[in-house]
Image (cartoon, rainbow, N blue to C red; front, side):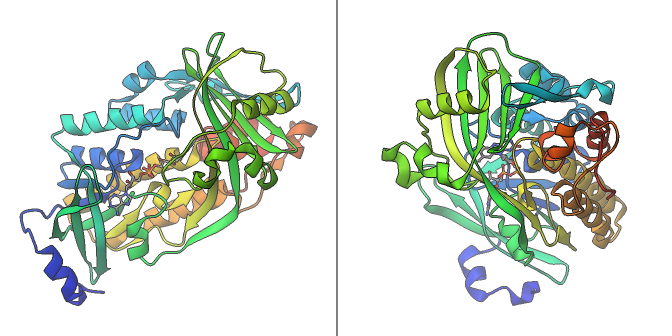
Amino acid sequence: MGIEAVPWAVRRAAGTEPDREPEVLVVGAGPVGLFTALLLHRRGVQVQIVDQARRPAARSYALLLHPGSLRLLDAAGLAGEALERGHAVDQVAFYEGPDRCAAVDLAALGPPFACAAVLPQQALEGLLESALEREGGRVLWRHRVSDLHLGGGAAVAVVERLALDSEAVEESWMLRPGVVIGTDGHQSAVRRALRASYVEIRPPERFAVFELAADGPASREVRVVLDEEGAAVLVALGGNRFRWGFQIDESQWEELLEPRFKRRVFDTVGDDPFPYLARQRLEELIARRAPWFSRTLGEIVWSMAVRFEHRLTGRFGHENAWLAGDAAHLACPIGGHSMNVGLREAADLAHQLGRILRERHPLDSLAGYEKARRSEWRRLLGARGHPEANAAASGWVRRHAARIPACLPASGDDLDALLRQIGLALPAA
Ligand SMILES: Cc1cc2nc3c(=O)[nH]c(=O)nc-3n(C[C@H](O)[C@H](O)[C@H](O)COP(=O)(O)OP(=O)(O)OC[C@H]3O[C@@H](n4cnc5c(N)ncnc54)[C@H](O)[C@@H]3O)c2cc1C
């Protein structure tokens, strides 16, 4: 639909504010949107970033920064701060029952970042927002893109300023950015405007997630359990804080929740999170699935039951509207792929778009972004087939080969290098 075709009702409700027409409008200020806006700003692009919520996020959510993400943050001058605020881990070990069955060493990736960093998502977002502000940028929090029309090489967005304490719209106006980037999460309005599908690649996985205090030193190892009930992961956040996430099947879902909270279950990534899972359930899950975990449990800081979907957009973008992050894909949380690959997409998009805008190339040269991203995600989500095992792979690794890539904190060449250590190779992109 071209600009001429924007419905009259939209024009009338919104009015136009010609002084508010950025080169690029970034919709959504989660980690991926913030990183995109920061990198575009640094390239001298005039960017406006809006978010309907008040962030940074209140909880840790995605918490593992891949070595590749540390390299990207380093190029932006932020890796030192991320490592200072976070907790470095350099091993991923796999368990089943009482046994340690395999281990992957991140040190094999070599300097400068032979480790991953455990950094709660809200800390990463705070760090990115501060960097953006130092560059003279600013997030417009509580600003929602309520309508977006694309077509004929143009984009028209209706932006609403929301009240701080309610959903009341205080003001709205029309914006005509040169390019729109949708980093607006799994319910992306930009993806809808692109009329892109969001195809379910595999059935959803349900997790019971607990953030808690426990005694003993923080370990530099992420521990993954792969057993007949699915996957589970233990991550040390530093100090005496830990995150346990247990995959659970549908039959356990109901019994896991405290009865008084059942009707308010937080069911899908992105909705308002809601506690609580009973402490007794955590103790049972640990006793059954991680008998090696012998730390004394302290306070449960928060807990929730959450369903993670596996989805991939049918189209990463077109002409002047492009997607990155959860707006384009959702994945199992253990390896942290959705956010970390999202950060790679942010860097790629900002790099290519910065050059295109500076050198006045046509926007369709971004088609390469679409191709590279799709092929990466088809590989990560197993759509190109499961990893093949060579002679170096143990029987246990062979049995669990299909699940292992999603549990490692890496993508691209780094993921290939980590898989090689245990005798696995993913099909080529
Ligand atoms: C409970 C929970 C636990 C999680 N645990 C993990 C984990 O252990 N490991 C892991 O890797 N990942 C985890 N995730 C997922 C992780 O949080 C996401 O992958 C990450 O936030 C994606 O970042 P993003 O920037 O792409 O999108 P988001 O963080 O979803 O940000 C999108 C933003 O867009 C804004 N927005 C949406 N629509 C509009 C609009 N129309 N106008 C303006 N703004 C809009 C939203 O307010 C939001 O702030 C978890 C998520 C949840 C909810």
